[in-house]
Length: 331
Image (cartoon, rainbow, N blue to C red; front, side, top):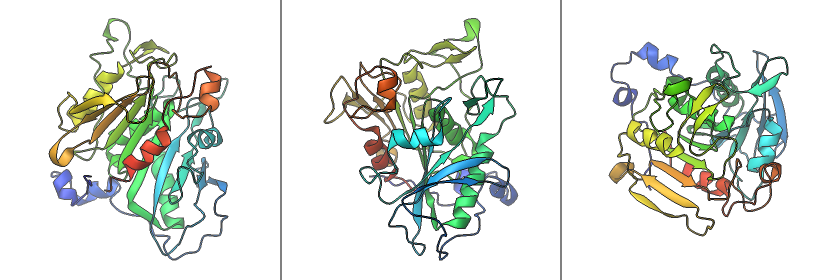
């Protein structure tokens, strides 16, 4: 499998000055390697940043402060919580994850009802910078724990998938996060009326790197973030295959997949699409979750998503596939 390496800043940002590279996050925080953490392992812990915002994190029971450990960000959906996302992705369980620190950021609250939403959602003011908040968390985790800064990853569901995409598209965070896996993402574009053409939307996306590994999941029966896109909450959602193809083109690949076929060991018409060849083989991947999969984190057992949407479980586990995908990439 291809391993994506960030060889030099000059290869990726040929016109960037040393100062701008520091702004993008190439300057690392004080390392926490060698410092035994004064926290419980294998326990979900809530922490607070100097800014006042909080986040949830979990450290695996085999954590060793003398050994660099990879880190995964997992983002909750709209109106949900970090705890709910941890219950959903099950990345704090040994069935899916034994060796990675997992961080569950917490969105801001907006409006009279104090709804929980991420940067880029129609409910959130345009000046909100959740990317900076996430990088503040990353700085804090790197100073407290022995983090492998070449193996930091991001995933999330619904608006959490949108937030994952925000990180992939931002110069600052895309310079520090190795790979991305949005699930059932709500990729809002701020256009309305006749400009809302789901197959022709343009995306505000400017990553720092030329090749961004991304694995996208979406169900064919999604009644919340429709697979075909269209108007929602005063903005516009893309046709999901158009969103995937845009990522392939952005990564310098063909917008036609190199492979398309049934997802191995799955049913319900679950289909795998792979983009890229040669050194960039499978850089962009997409799973159509199946004809009967609603707005959910795909799992082979009932979870809060499938129960909420009265939808059958999927025929595969997204968490397993995401973990395998992350394992292929480093900065």
